[in-house]
Length: 377
Ligand code: SF4
Image (cartoon, rainbow, N blue to C red; front, side):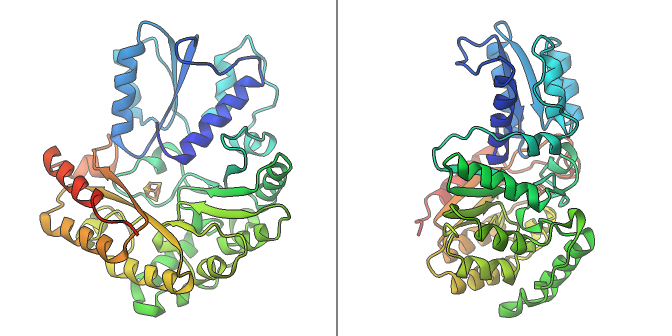
């Protein structure tokens, strides 16, 4: 029901169960259905309600992944036949749902699963490789930090081993995945430093203070260290990552994009809003001006970059002036593509508790359409 991370998780579940004598099949033939919930937008939970209504008499249904406690209670009340695994590390509990089929691996932890299994992938040459789980950012519209827990980076050596194995299976294009991929390996203190630097700096000096990163939890090194290590892997032809946060972008990462032989040339840099007032309400820790300066720096270093972004329209309190600021910045940057979401209040998030979802659906749709019609680069 969600993003690329969700897709990877569903592939993992498929592999976990296929290895135990159960087979993936069409919905019509299935004896049971596993729904993998998404934690970012309420619309994903709404879609689950829609599906349950359709399937309630036909299937044994499991819901796993990012489900907030409040959603869990409501779903269980309405559909008592549901089994919901809403924990940070739900993978290790999945085998227990099917006791007739013994697990092939000892799932002591999610990381254990990550490191021991190599997932089937959908395209012949491309694979996603998660490099971190959870998130520390607490954007007010998002439930990830509550459902997936605090940010944890995978050890470097496990990532390298996984990529080498994938190359052995015929993959040559790797996309590194994480909720805030470019804070890979950073300690809390260093993240705070990044944010302070970003707040202080403007113009071309924006990233200068961000350059020194030291070894942190998991002995991972910084994100740019990781990129340069992966660059050296034989057989790897293309490398990119999804999704970086503007607040943690560094000159070192930009330098990698500019000089790497393997960078795919594609970068998704979520803006979310072009209004400082809304960015603050979203708890995004950069201003529109800082975002623009960052893009300028990236385009100067990588002139032919294919830049895309994510925007939420209709966030609580978004006036016409706020939306116009978003429109203008998108017009100015000329993205290759904009992934637009109409804001929907996600139960249990800060935005749901403290801000009224006060923008009419009609207005959200109009703003969506207006942005959607912007000519792309
Ligand atoms: S960066 Fe913000 S939107 Fe992205 S996962 Fe973390 S809290 Fe959610």
